[in-house]
Image 1 (cartoon, rainbow, N blue to C red):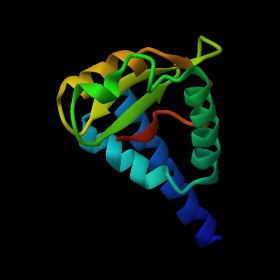
Image 2: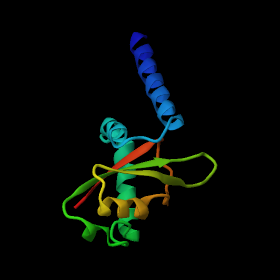
Image 3: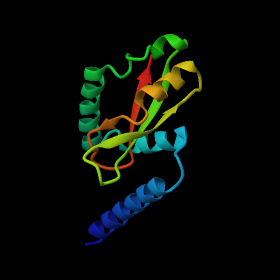
Image 4: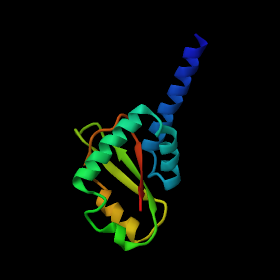
Length: 131
């Protein structure tokens, strides 16, 4: 019985934390990275990330605006996907880079506001490494 109570308390805390993040101000790169690190090993995360990779590759979202040529070196992006419950689609609400340069500004325009499949939970944070 105690094991079930403990699981419930942990689950309730995770839900409360997610609600606070969604209801609060925009996330920082560090906030988004913490969410990603805590969920990236979940089966739901991995399945959605695989679906998103196919979506990304099909529409060539990372290549369509020529962003790679705008600055040297790799960048890391955190895509924050949200869903308001009213639409059949979720959207990329924030594109948070680890550095600010022309390349990341371009990726923000390429990915920001894109409608996508509703994730298994929100906020859903996808990490992209862009060479």
